[in-house]
Amino acid sequence: MRIAVLMPQVPFVRGGAEVLCEALCGELERRGHETELVEIPFGWFPADVLLDQLLAARMTRIANADRVIATKFPAYCVDHPHVTTWLLHQHRLLYDLWGAPGTGTDDSVRGRALRDIFRRADRERLASARRYVISGVVRDRLQRYCGLDSQVLNPPLIDPQRFRHGPSGDYVFFPGRIGLFKRQALVIEAMARVRSDVRLVIGGPPAREEELWPLRALIARHRLGGRVELLGEWLPAERQAELYAGALAVVVPPVDEDYGLVTLEAFASAKPVVTCTDSGGPAQLVEDGSCGFVTAPQPAALAAAFDRLRGEAGLAQRMGEAAVVRLGGLALSWDDVVDALVA
Amino acid sequence: VRILVAFAYVPFVPSEGREAAHKLAVTLGDSGWDVAFSGLPIDPAGPRTGQLLALRLLAVEAEAARLICLGSPACMLRHRDKRVWLDSAFDVPAPDASGSVRARSHAVALEEAQLVALTRGDGAATLLRALARPACVLERPASDAGWRQAATALAG
Image (tube, rainbow over all chains, first blue to last red; front, top):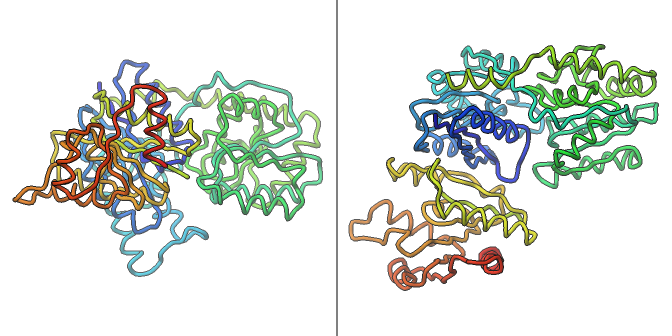
């Protein structure tokens, strides 16, 4: 079967979605399908351009494909008779992040009218597509905002053989893209409150260089230069695996994350994960007190978790071992994902 | 400076244009530019006007300081600093008496470009006459050194 995997692509931005779509293409090809990753340029800022993006998607035709697998807004709006969605997320600024601080929500009459146009368009298009989602978090949002049922297909860990186990180090690793909703600032604030000698290493790139500036300023204000390392760049796979293997623990505190690939990577590296009660996918994956901690989204609570992992002999290692068991228990399989998507 | 290299392609069909766009992006990256590469799916059997409009609507300006479009219809993308590298003058429809949407939209898209280059010189004069749009000749390079020169000419 010829399958086009569609992914809206903000130029110069690379994150978990890109990695996941590339992995899906690889898995489809391994099973004999001819696959093409179609990355449609996508801009969402300023908000007015969103309507253009929606119209552009509706007029975009995908030639030569027996099936289209669409992953995000507005890719599922393309003109093709056989669209299957494997929804990573909807455009969250129009849904659960509407009105959230720092998002620049246009809460005027016009802004709300536009939002409702997008919601109607989503509902209409998604209602006619085969619907799979990557997590319970995404399923619940789709049900809550669009009234649509969907089936969860959790993505398995990508490239699992690159992760290895190593002795607990003295730092907490914070991988992944830098952004407001990933909450790097919250963790830096936590580091200003720790009592142990634990360090923090923040990996991953920002969408724009300017996003690093407030984090650097925060580190300087708390005089954390010696204990917080802000790498600020996309890490090669081997370097990332090395940082996982040498960490004390991994921190994943985003706001209502869709799924939690980073959490799976930490588990595969036998590391406990510290996440927050409002972190969505990661909070569902981490069993509090067993393979990590699920804390309040407060600096003091995160700091206490870091201190406990650093101070209590053998705790990080025991939790890391539990994380490996937890990952195995999830029984995630690409066979299940691919079978459902191409059925 | 962030540069976006864009080209249009038909999924599942290999093309020289696609390879050229990739080569140009790699060469620019090796020369120290911050480069992203964007493929625009098109369906040659589908309605042209809608697809041209779709490309026109895509928002890439906020992300890249400069845009290099290879061929038509990639040249339909909007950008304040757009450079277009066409395969030949015959890549774009000449304005005709009937004033077709396709011809008029290409005229606008090329008019707003900072630079229009053609891989072959034979049509430069034709394009110049037809669109009143200056165009230079920049042949498709055959060597890495040639690609570096082309990249400098397009991005500099």
